[in-house]
Image (cartoon, rainbow, N blue to C red; front, side):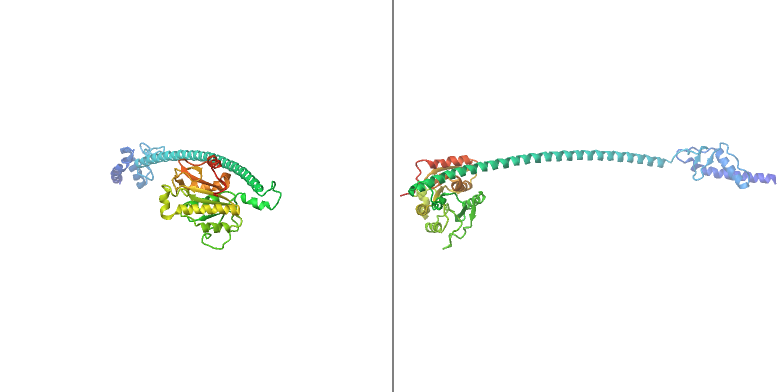
Amino acid sequence: GGSSDFARNMALALLLTVLGACAAPSLAFSPGGSLPSPRLSFAHSSALSSGVMGRPPVPSAVGATLSPGRNSLFRPNGRGRAAPMALRMAQDDMDDLAKKFEQEKQTRIEMDKIFSDASKDLENLANKEMETLKEETEGLLQQREEEWEALGNKAAEAMVGKVDSLAEDFLKKAGRSTDDDDDDFEEMERFLGPSEVAVVGEKTPLRDEVEARVRGYGGLEMSSCERLLETRGMVIEKSDTLVFVGDGDALDRYTVERLIKRCQKLRRVVIVSSLGVERSNLFPFSLQNALTGSLDKKRDVELGVIELSKKLGFAFSMLRVGKVGTDASLGGVQVAAGDQMSEDINVGVAADAVVQALMLQPAALNCSMSLVGVKAKEVTQDEWDDEFLRLEGPEVWRGGPT
């Protein structure tokens, strides 16, 4: 019985040894591991055999045990011999990704800081520019207000002086030396500046510019005159100044005189005519006048206004302009008494001349003048004053032809 037990135990041990040898490759294949010793396999087999046979387990020669959960070998202190290679590679990749993420995060923070600083700099620069522009604008507005105030004072002084002179002449003609009679005020009022203007004439660029200048001038009002030339019997109640724009086709003398007589508060009449009305028989104006006689018709209108001025007592101004165009280089002006020169004129300069004659130049009262354009950027008020001073000379006849 003893020999058979011994034989059976040896066979079982041999079987377990073979099984241990088969399991050895999986143990040896663990990353970082080493091949198990024969003693481990024998001890393992001894332990298994003891468990099977009911005997106490055979202690290991080296004190090693198998991991309970995996086919890996553990040392007695509980630490694994090696970590799996895949886990190590995954850990390295995670570390690299973490470093890249941290670098990108830091770069994004730096870029945000740069953008924030640049935005603040731009905002500060824009605020400074806006403040500068605001100061410059306020300065320009203040300068314009001062210029307009000075211009208004100058015009008022000139107009008062002219009114005083006209009033004195009127009183002398009436045989009086003082204006103590209240009835004289209504007559003297005719020589005051305009307050409401009616612009009459065919639709031309110059008429449009004149209307725009009159509307833009402070203290003046515009009357609607679209039907004045065609409507009979209409009374002009509010307008105290009539501006007839006749630089194009000639106006009809009868129509002009009819409108003047129907204006109940008339003070001033301004006629915009053409150069050559007194030279229609001379070249080159004779060619212009040969076919239609337009220059003779325009001169006829002028003579009719002068005659009515003597009868009704209003002041007149005859502005004879050159060919009206849009040449921007002709920003200057030249003024002369009578009918002189033959050059063209810019439409804006011609319209400004009408406002000057109406509001700012007493020398234009009861006067016929010629205006042409000259090469310049613009006309200042001082230059306008200098040009109209040419009308103060002895060559100007104030009373109209006899």
